[in-house]
Length: 113
Length: 114
Image 1 (cartoon, rainbow over the protein chains, first blue to last red):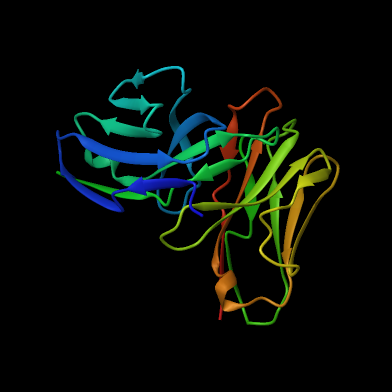
Image 2: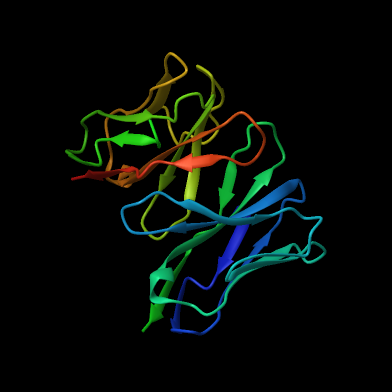
């Protein structure tokens, strides 16, 4: 059972465009939703995160939108740049004291110059 | 150290051999995790250590997989009698003791079973 569903699998955007990646979760015990950025050969790095009591969080060009009733959240990358080309993972955490992360399958973002 | 260090970075092994993967967490991080990343997939949780004990081993896929941690520091993930389906990137992460933030991942070990 996949607890965090992510779409699309891949995304191609022109430089300056908006990249949008969507995730949906099932477990209502989740209480923290981070997004990770992963470059080839590297481990995932935390990009931005949100708690379910907030509907939106913005950090620079990156924004998370959160819809608690629909159990959905999304990452928006404004003014996308070629350096943003990477794999992005949404994740969810909660429901226990071990703080283990449940990940989506990832989105490969390519930003063309 | 400054980050989470994993070794080797790449490992090619023959089917049926045993392998050991090593993780050096950030000094002082009491929590340590192993995740597996198969090609085109998200990260799958394998095991969680708090100190030297492993209260959650629920993600280990079979009894061929085991892990230990010593001195609240280095951890070793061992895969016995490797199979081709074990081919993946194995990622280690450590976390500081204060709350849900503070995960730091290593760059992983890419394991290829031929």
